[in-house]
Amino acid sequence: MRLPRDLSGADLVKRLERLGYQATRQTGSHLRLTSTLQGEHHVTVPRHDPLRIGTLAAILDAVGAHHGLSRDALLDRLFN
View (cartoon, helix red, strand yellow):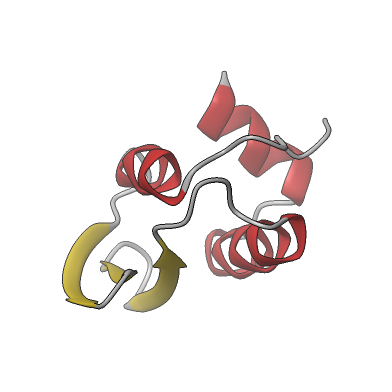
C-alpha cells in the first residue's frame, strides 16, 4: 500500500489513537504521543498539513517496529 500524500498531522494522531497512543504533551506545532501497550513508546508528530512523505515514513517505521508490524500491515490497520 502506498503512503497517503495528503495526510495531516492531526489526522495521523487520530489514527494512531486506535493503536493506543495518547497525546502527552505539545510544544508548538509538535505533539508527543505515548503508548503503554507492549512497553512504553514515544513518537513525535508535527501538526502540519500535509505531512512530508519522509516524516510520515519515519513515524510509521518507528510505530511499526515497536508493535512488530511491517509498514504494509500497519497501513492496513490505520487506513482500513
